[in-house]
Image 1 (cartoon, one colour):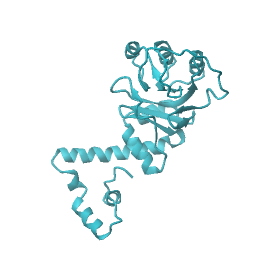
Image 2 (spheres, rainbow, N blue to C red):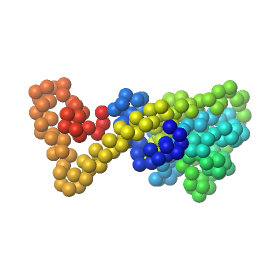
Image 3 (tube, one colour):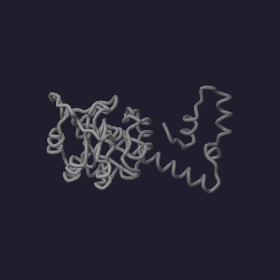
Image 4 (cartoon, one colour):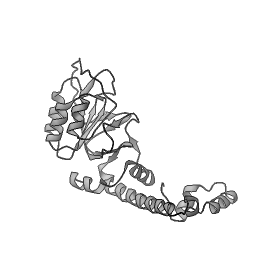
Length: 235
């Protein structure tokens, strides 16, 4: 799925919808560390992963951007280290000017005021004023993969981020996951609309019926019950 189709397909899908869809389909639910957040509320990020590992110098980012495609997401592996910020306003401006969708940093950023003006979606572990004071040897795989928390990511993955965090999904599963996520979204919206009109979720889920069936069969789960009545919102 190309960047334009990714943007269009996932424009109205949230990370909770997509996480539930992955669970339903048996796709591993891979997410960034819970402490990683967007710089401002309302951010929405989607695009193919453009991985890059940081070694202390900004030129590695420029090289990664030079080899990226429009719509990609720059995923920066700085090892989650909290003693330096590795992305600031100039790199962010370069990313925006190259037409990338945003930046995900397994590490810290700086120049928060300037980044808020640039307004490119940026997710990081937080802000620090100090930049790197090191220059490490570059590894051969600097542009082949990047780690974000426990997950190793490549250009075969795409990132989806919003106020609830960031998910990483295989590109090859993009269409299938989106279809399931849209179904879950519509089910939830219908249930929410009915609740606002006075029909509780317990009524919609026929909860007394579930309790009775579980009493008869203790192995019966609520998810199984919801699937049987067409109200599944998880798996």
